[in-house]
Length: 432
Ligand code: KE4
Image (cartoon, rainbow, N blue to C red):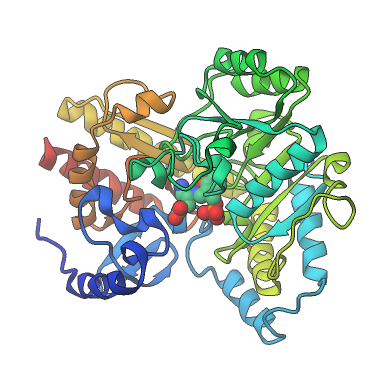
């Protein structure tokens, strides 16, 4: 299998490193953990992404989740173009923000009141501030390996890029603030109960990825999330479901619809913006009315509810709201891929672990079950890196880290899945 021509990408990367930290605007894009220069992308359409050297790939990153309908969806592009002709930002309320809030509540009824922000991080940090104010408590519980964005309080045993680069506890976070973040083990309810026993009356909220994407995909064990809700509520704390990744992806109503759980607060990002910078947080009216200007909890944003971002997000969400067959299709394609990769491993006498939740999946290079952070960390990341390069050579663009979720879009076809299964077989064979 010939090597890729990536000359233009590498030249751009050398130039980028002169002006940007690590040559990128978000660490995990730097391809460091897969030991190669990143590809610079020129365009994308549907399930395909094209780099500046003219290579085409079947894309399983999908901008890390937003592109559930595929890239440059005609309805999304048309909505952005139309909105842009009316101006790009007003710093004043618009009808599109009301429409967005109403649609979010229709799709996720637990979100009675919602505030738009500009990223998933803004959403989660604001939700934690509201929870701290509403409960008049300062401590929060997160789970090792979960990633909720780069807010100081979350960079404690954080997943995603923080784990990829070995900085799950980032420098620069004040010790006294870090001490207010308590860390439990995902899928281990006892670890949560112990934290509540040791910190009686001090924990404002538990924040969790209902299905984890940021250790790689890790599903909740039966009863874990409902148990979490019960433990939080019986100790006077709130449950925040971080659905930045799972929201509108795992089901029309996100993981909370799929898993039948009603949180106090939910956070959003990615899909809600249709590829433009959007985040949101919301939940029970009695909690959200503490947010300024209704209440005293201050949170603001110059570009929050930006008309172009609302147009893109609304165009995408309206399709997801109306065409519910999309979720059946994503599940079908996900199952097809999972079965194909597992068949390959049987043929090759390999026993790596593939975790999947609908259109989110991760192939872990370990033969153990991956159900929490420690079992995810046991993976052979060097073998993942070798596999990554082989898949890239075969035209498959995966997230460049063992600790990330890959995403199938509604633009992917059965043929794409077959090609991916074939590339997976050849790549696993090549590194074995
Ligand atoms: P942003 O601030 O990156 O929009 O969202 C932060 C965030 C919050 N919660 C969850 C569950 C998330 O997955 C994320 C961001 N996800 C990563 C990928 N795992 C974004 C990619 C990146 O950091 O470049």
